[in-house]
Image (tube, rainbow, N blue to C red):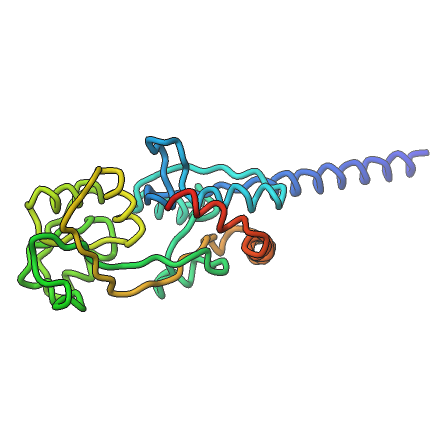
Length: 245
């Protein structure tokens, strides 16, 4: 009788422990930085951004509850490094991040370039170095700011893309270096604009990113990749992204 009771207790304890681990695995916390139109905390039309819609759909198919919090990029980095979040909604790959971050398959590509107005002929701008004699602005928190400094460009740092684009339209700067989709989306929100040119320097993929210290990150990335591939094949990715054009 005693052995039977002991066996029952062991089974119950095992089930409770197993159930707890599954419950923990069915929720994921990701942190986003404001990056329209991919990620938006409070857009005027209520849309969250196509990257967030991708994630919501993918984790819904995986039956995993998704929790998202918005923070400025540097605070988002600290949050992931400290274990407050399992990862980033999306990020670019950097060599210095590879030892502590793991990446999904590409979710998309982001163009990097410069918006020009009342400045040089766009045909004469092919690299960052070509902006040395041009009054240029860039968002301070972006790695693009560091790239401009390395290229010898004395760029004016701004707090966000909207401010940089307004400076461009108001004639305070002749160039604003940023990301293609973000620039065009915000310009469309600012109303009719004229005489603004865009020159692209490069395009690079971006990913959902999980910290390597998160238990089971490899298996989760594998599951996410399979579901995201299905979303591409069944037209879900195109349907979502088309709402932001």
